[in-house]
Image 1: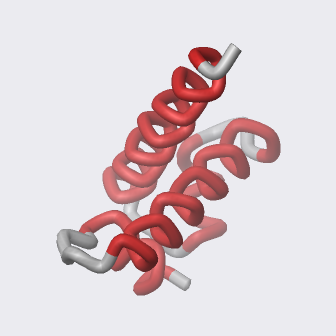
Image 2: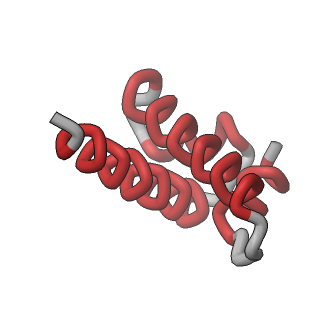
Image 3: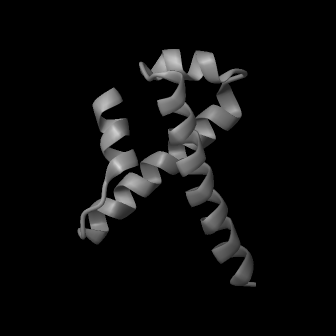
Length: 76
């Protein structure tokens, strides 16, 4: 699981479908942290990440989630 998370976090390719899938995964990982974990340490331990890696995943997922929320708000 750790390898997939790090691939999603570091993807720089041009495949739009893969980029969307990785963004969906990072969004999911952010929401999992938001809804199910009290501490960064426990989240990192659960996913087998270093604390700094877990923080990067959460921040990347938060940005994706927030950007998508803005798009949805602007649809109204």
